[in-house]
Amino acid sequence: MLFRSRRHGHGRTQLAVLLSLSAAAGPAPAAPASAQPAPLVPTPPDDTPTPPAIAVPGVESRVIERVTLDVAVQRAIARNPTALLAAQEIRRSRALMEEIRASSLPTLAGVATYTRLDKDRVSNGTVLAAEGSVNLNAALDAPLVSPRTWVRWGQAVDQIDVARANAADVARSVGIATARAYIAIIEQKRLIDTALTARDNARSHFDFTRAQLVGGVGSRLDEVRAAQILTADEVNLQNQEFNLLRAREALGVLVASDGAVDAADEDFGGNLPSLGDAMTEAPKNREDVRARERAAAAADRAVRDAWADYVPYLNLISYPLYNNPPLPSAPNTGWAASLILTIPIYDGGLRYGQDHERKALATEAHIDVEATLRQARSEVRTAFDEVQRADAALDQARQSATFAKKALELATLAYRGGITTNLEVIDAQLQSLNADTQAAVAEDASRQARLDLLAASGRFPWLSPRTPR
Image 1 (cartoon, rainbow, N blue to C red):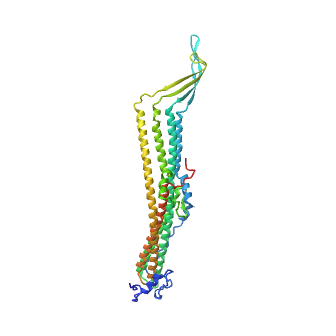
Image 2: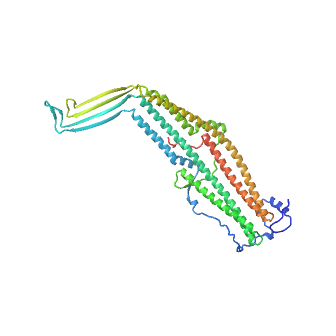
Image 3: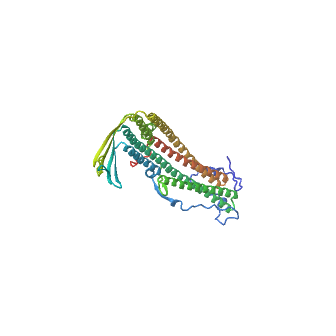
């Protein structure tokens, strides 16, 4: 195919020049003598301003620290409000257990009474009530045989274990969310590099078109088109810078920092399991599965303990006393004790209703376990396929970006050699930016896929021994 110069009005064929340009791998060759830019002189009278480089001071200074992924995850699990609230739920469950346990243990209460009358109450020379009297007694209530309160005590202990399992599940969710925020920062830095490259290419092209116009051999239309691309790339760069700032702030919130936190420039790896290993490990290692199984076990125990609502229970009630002055009906010291046996006979169907409720809750808990296991296995299969496809897409995206860069180089060389118009350069710039962006997105997808597989198999996050228990 023959290419004719449109910039200089020459009619000579440029095929040989184009072939030599396509074979070149180094820097762009010098333009023909008639196309050499003249030394920069004041801009000719026109209304096309020079797009300035935009700088926003203070953005980087907002970043307090840079952390590794392990540090970020452990800090989030230890400090994130969601994880802290889950830890407080453990304390609340323990407090509820103490409240329920109290009904299974003896209680002792002391009472002191002082009575003052206007005068002694006397009958037939006998003082029936003294003018001033002191009465001291204590009430001891001891459940001797109380199966119902004992089983409730054990069920309350189970709820502490359930709260611990839920706290571990919350820690898992916080850790995964932190890893996603961490990966988002890595991706955003990659997008900023892409935006910087595109901006620099656009500025170089704009500078060349401006120099051509100043030298009297360029086109005003070429300059305006180049300026438009440059300003658009500046806008894209600022947007990506803000997105990075927002991603750093998001990570700072997750790790409970008072400011933005940056991610160290490291790739997300991890020991990826095989599909078989992941399917085997998921039910054993995933904290969400463990939490559902623990809740189901507690519900099953509540069903088994229903017998305690139907058996008698025995209490001891004792009253030691002291009276001063002693009276015929109230000696100076003494005590009284009672054994109270209670036999549940009929309560209007309350126990049957409670039993039905416990059985329904146990059934719901087992359904939840099955659903969680099914979801876990589905996530493993999906994540494993996601990793393979994301890696394949990443390889193609990187090749596409390489081809796009090469096309931009050739288009730029051809334009400077007077073979093509700057429309080809602008199109190549846009294609290169899109390809680089697509490669950055593919890199992020590959990292996210690895995170998904590790999380689905239960290998992530690596919970600290200090996780609330």
